[in-house]
Length: 188
Ligand code: ADP
Image (cartoon, rainbow, N blue to C red; front, side, top):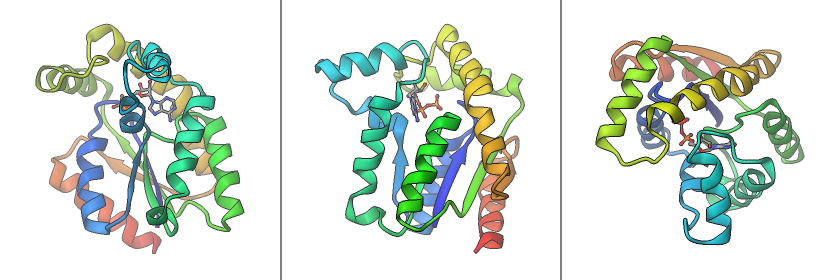
């Protein structure tokens, strides 16, 4: 299956993605992880860091080659779970084009939604546990704003294709996961 996971920072995408990857045995394509994996001291890594450390989106000329390279690998021939991608309508259009060439389309778009006031809390808590440079109050606000203005419209794009599943992310992680599995089952 080709699945896109969309939700604001702090919605719990990471937790649900690890469970899904295990349960569906589908490769996980997280652009956030892949961008963070670029060597911070390399010239490319410095450019990437100059965007992600302040909560801005990395430009498409950096993101798209990372994605298409990953998609050309063997394990990604019959499906994958996109996490954090596409993050703009333009990226969604580029992905549509890419998949069209392979004569496949996105089977399901999981929209994990959570009350905005809960998000900030969760992100600040995560900041204490992990050591992500972009988990500070200022950068978190920037990321939430980028989500609202640039990523939320991606949902409209997919609603036009009729494949969005609405998932209530305010529940316990177990219940969220159950809802995701039930939703995906209905798309098979
Ligand atoms: P979050 O939990 O904030 O959604 P991610 O790990 O998905 O975290 O992304 C972290 C950062 O990586 C983003 O704020 C952005 O700067 C960059 N990034 C990730 N995916 C993309 C993408 N598809 N396009 C542009 N930038 C991206």
